Length: 194
Image 1 (cartoon, rainbow, N blue to C red):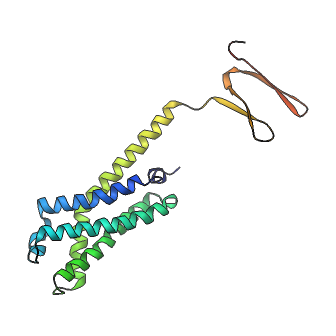
Image 2: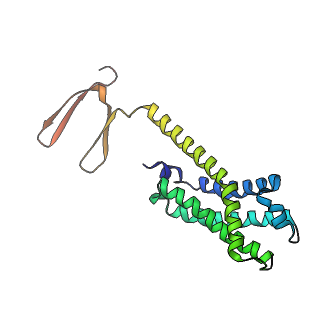
């Protein structure tokens, strides 16, 4: 089974994306104010923290929609498609963020200038949570796969009748031989040392 399919078979990894990406964006933008964001957004009323909170909500809504769609198509995704999906997450969020900035600046700048600023900001800040989440999910999945491999294979044989009803479960090492008698089989095995 594909590791990506194994990771996304439940919805909790999607929830991690929906919460972590906007939270990281908000924290990073509030602490470091990169790319002149405080001068770019700070001149618009009601102020820089409000706009960063709104942009984080836009990212959360965009992630929620995108990750819900990804959950529907989770069986058809591989690593390349997942990478493309993450880039499309950022691009879609950037379009909505650019629309918000453009409207808040009262259309004094071109729309695609606001989208370019939003895309650059989104790419430079949000790539970190995507990478960290992906690596931690891959690590968790590989750890689970190794634990399953260490358990060893199931060395029991199951015998069913013609109606697919389980009749006997025997350890492989306890079977002496199996013989056929017309339409029946005889299984000679050791049970409790006998």
